Length: 95
Image 1 (cartoon, rainbow, N blue to C red):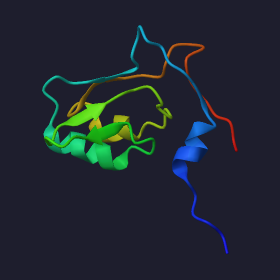
Image 2 (image 1 turned 90 degrees about the vertical axis):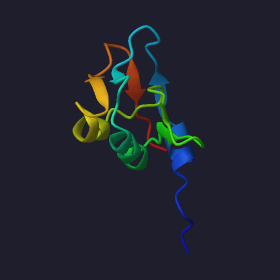
Image 3 (image 1 turned 60 degrees about the vertical axis):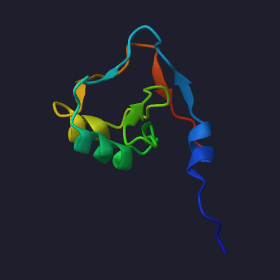
């Protein structure tokens, strides 16, 4: 019998070069709450986290650059979405 896949372990194999000076995703200050909740459910890396007070917190470090949040939230929740500058971003390592 196979065991369930632990997503955190799989993601932990990847290498992330975070550009601290230039975030590639910027959440709008007046972001639509429903759009943020949708992003919290849809992000495969789990970077949009719903807090106890109902707000949604986001951290771009660990982004898989899949574009899910760009498709679902650009304009309603996100001010900016672009790929990271050269040498930054995710380096996939299959494990």
